[in-house]
Length: 69
Image 1 (cartoon, rainbow, N blue to C red):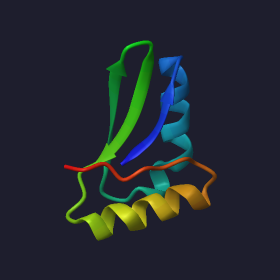
Image 2: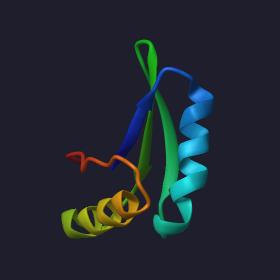
Image 3: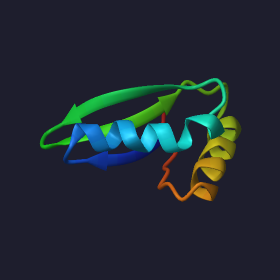
């Protein structure tokens, strides 16, 4: 799942600190994409698991998008 795209990589780390407790079993990945750093978390066993994780992240006030494997 993608939890945001940030111009400042430090902001991606701050965002992970806010949601990591709701992202059970996942690990963060910080991916450079041009001028931004994408915060991606996973892996998840299924699309349904990723969807539940996104719902948990959204309940914490985070943006979240399920990405295709």
